[in-house]
Image (cartoon, rainbow, N blue to C red; front, side, top):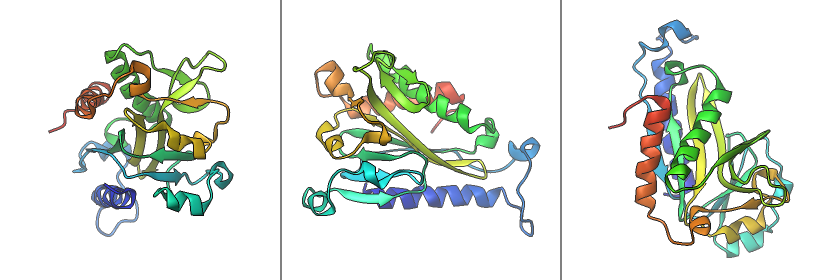
Length: 227
């Protein structure tokens, strides 16, 4: 699915959930004590995008290294988004996960939510014999996070939250063409590499298998069951 269509779908789901949390005639929404009784619905979307660079709301446009002319010639779209984070790439062979969750049914802590998204990917990587790690002060999932010169990012994370309903999420490089990252400073972090599951294991991976594992890890980490 193209990026804009997926963004619009997420916002539709987010606004539907936010609307359920705001009683008619009130400008405020239920406090946390009442949140578990609301009729909001959790959604988990997995998607592959056509090639696109997206810049987070606090991102630096200087981290885009390719000219608009060259970008268009290469068929790469560009969007400034309302998620957190800086510049990243989405494209074929990458699993992008968009959780539209009502965090008031879990906890009201964005930091904990980000760590749990990382945990979903770390547990999935472990199924493939790869040790995923966190890097202090840098949201996402890394390999060899503590080895100077060999740190490489395999999953970027950027989210938005409105009245504790989330959207956007993470981009997990599976069979991604990593050459696209040469035209940006990924996540605004210079001198660090980007990698993929295919590059680490030396073979083309089954995306559907990865999605199944990710779904299982979401259910484990968030203690929920998807249909």
